[in-house]
Length: 401
Length: 138
Image (cartoon, rainbow over all chains, first blue to last red; front, side):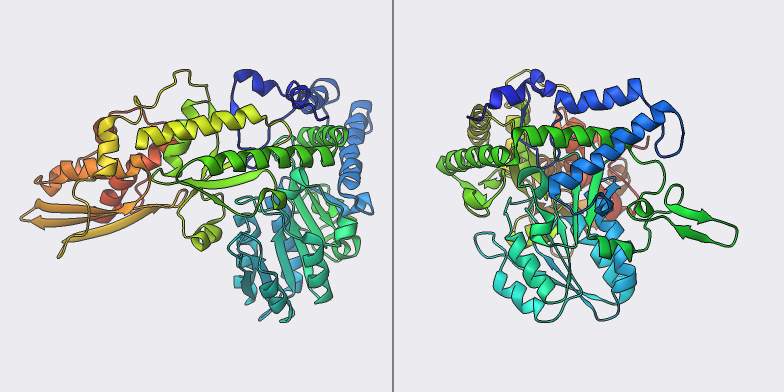
């Protein structure tokens, strides 16, 4: 039996009384993650990889430990395939720069989907503009699922790159990532999966899925901000150019030129967010201990409960697929109340939701809305919190009646 | 961010704010406008446009159009009431503080852009201040 109260006791922020329904934006952090960073700062704060003294070696060991944990969490074949980044956005930009600039040329096709977050759109638009490549979009059907027929038709045009999210941040749709990846690779495309929402809520086995790249962020999965992981298949990473350049990513620097380090160090220039990556290691441990199946099961139960309760309110439009096909994200509209006004009133009930475009303007255009309200859940969300949300919405309806 | 304790709302969404939202004054387009400009808030998709009819340096008529939250729409409606019949020189002097005063409620940092969108339309459109920002310089 999943004990949500026991989980919540690990999260100091809930002592404030906040009803936090914005975990798709950023998650909360358990004591274990905060302690891991505190321990680094107070017991062995030192730079990594560079110094032959005890606390630096200890810091390096803990830092590299996160790489091993990340490898296990997503089931990569080797720790060399785990590149530390500062978040999903940097991971995708790294691929657009280090792989894209060498491999995308005039007339090449890049396939995206209308569900993408801006971080999986803008780097490709910049690359396409620079190289004279073109971008095509996979649409959704009326229930918020990607149109697989259209996706297959685009694959017939032999795209060089296909990039899509595992889970939509704006609607929660869980995409059939394995089938889409297999089809895209069979068509000869390189596949990048944006795992910013997928890694925290659904988990992934990158070898089973078979994608070339998988990018995700620490702060959406119980870790601190400023850290993330880019997985890349070894053969493809080895052929890539560096993204950021400077210290640590080199093999040899002379006045005549520079040779680059092996992967993954080649992509990790400068002093990395050491404390944050150590914190992320503790987040992997935490999620492992709870179990991703339990996380997923709890989220599904809360999401079903929330969608049912929201569906009972008058004037509510809920976007996206049924609860069984989505992560813990529910986007909705309340007739006659702008999402920002709703969020302001809910804030007075201590309820935190997101209101706006969710960094997904093409999707908002597609839905024909200017903004939506979005409640999102995680392993610590309680049914009672959904009840407070419902009361708050009813209150907003009373005020705006 | 501190947690607000009061149960609230009527205090925040005061009756006249809701009234301006539901029954906006001077709403629509103006045929033969002398000045016409539109701005949006890319964060939330709110849009406001203002049409002015200026005769002999005096704002003879004004309309606004657009869509958005209660704060942005009510502040636009209130602003048009201020603009009616005043000179362009007077209109130029309308400040952020004036808009907040008209709204008469405590605007949280996250909603400042909603409250000032209509003033931005005026500043950028009518006065050509393309770099005018709703954000304070630090």
